[in-house]
Amino acid sequence: MSSISVIVPIFNVEKYIKECVISLLNQSFKDFEILFIDDGCDDKTVEIIKTFKDDRIKIFKNDKKGAGAARNFGLSLAKSEWIVFFDGDDFCNENYLKKLYGRAKEQDADIVICGSLDYSERKKRFSKPRKSHTLECVDVALEHCVKSLDEMDDSVADSLLDLAEPWNKIYKRNFLIENDIKFPEIMCSEDLPFSYEVLFKAKKISFVKENLVFARRRASSLSYSVDKNWINYFTAYKITDEIAFNYTHFEKIKAAYFDRKFRTYKYFYKKAGVLCKIPYLFKFLNEMKCVNEILKERKYGLLKILLP
Image 1 (cartoon, rainbow, N blue to C red):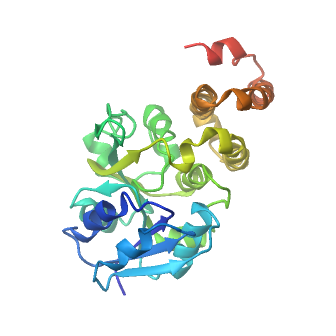
Image 2: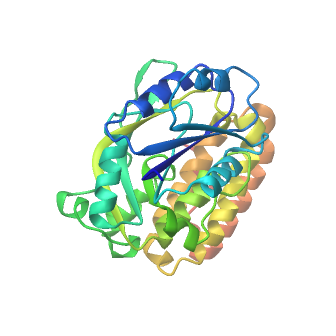
């Protein structure tokens, strides 16, 4: 049995999958398996993967049920002690698994989070680093200890709410299974509720303050297809709200949670096409009303949210 199961949902990423596979196979840490979950590819993605003759590669079919369902299926197949979720259009540093696994074993952590960088597919270069993603909030003392979210300084806890991606972390498999943490099976933004539930339930969170994974940002990805998928952002936050509001220490992260939520809404509202803006705006206004009622104040207003 391998020490790590790397779960990779794939859907029509033939342009990027070779770089993804090479970056994983070139890892300095060797004791892992890669579970590629074919989510209904109709291009050459699977064919390209099959050209790599490596026993650690395994391909499974999941019939176009979405990335969340694909990751859940992969988790049900995995037998390793540690789980890594990766995306088929991303790539990583050669020490990505070694560093995460080493810290996880050393600290017996539930999850370990590493730094990451965005790579702009359009510009063919790394984007300006986001402070939260490069873990600038984490000092040396915190990097070498394990704490739950409620035990961390407010500034660190707030910054972690911007890390709603699954691929910059390694997870103890038993932690996910025992807490029944799964991805909601919606068409996009499924990583948001999952990542927040992980952060809220983990008793031992640790860090590797190095940028080890590189997320490719491309306009054609499902997450950025706002015109078709805008409703999913509200659906994802509806699910996440239930998780967050039941978090014992919600008061500690409440302001940061709502700020992150409305930054997300604002970003995608600006990207939405003309035909989507009106229904999006009505959902937006309803969200503002609900949050203002929770806060017992009118902190969020339309002009304040939408204006730069």
